[in-house]
Image (cartoon, rainbow, N blue to C red; front, side, top):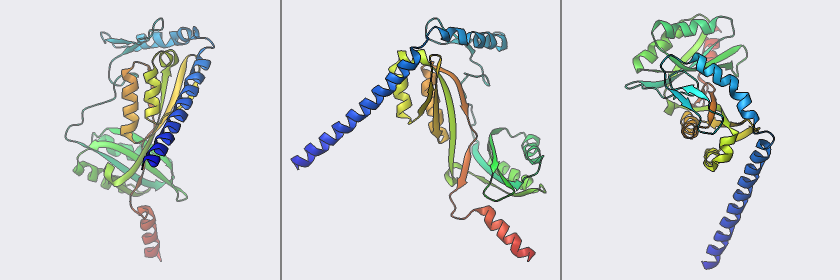
Length: 268
């Protein structure tokens, strides 16, 4: 038993040494890239400061980055880059609508018009070609009640070129998102917690230069937003972008395939 304990401890120490070597290599790469020209940061952000101040609503409080000599003003208002993204949706459920349609021009406009007429705001929208030739897949998320979600599905399915529409809650589907964060490289160098947060969330640093560091994170919505919120609390986030949600059902059989098979049988 003691021998097993010693072997386990040695293997654990070996893994810890490997992780420390990896973290040291990452920090060294960041410092090497940032050491090229640190003074260029203020020059590159001068235009962003002017743009932020010119678009800021009158009387809105301004945020300032905490690093010295390179203050960037960002209005702390909703729907503005750098503002908090969390909104209140009390009493509403996030539904994911998966829609299949023929690949014709103007279908997207017809689908979004259904949401507009019923005063339902679209949270995210992703359009891509499906595995079925000639068929496109729309993944739309919105906060609403169950009755409204079912009504939206029925109204969308009435469109001539729409093949099928279904609504799901998060427990019924597998979901994924991709995000990109632009961080201040001087702040990443000054605060070791920033690199630790990135590693803890299994995110990737895809680009490092003296001005900014680009981080990519793929995962569920909660994981993506957790990374953003922790980094934003450090005041190092310069830009943040999320892709629309992509989703597949937990069913073993694709519902669209069932529908197309049944329609073909009825024709024959």
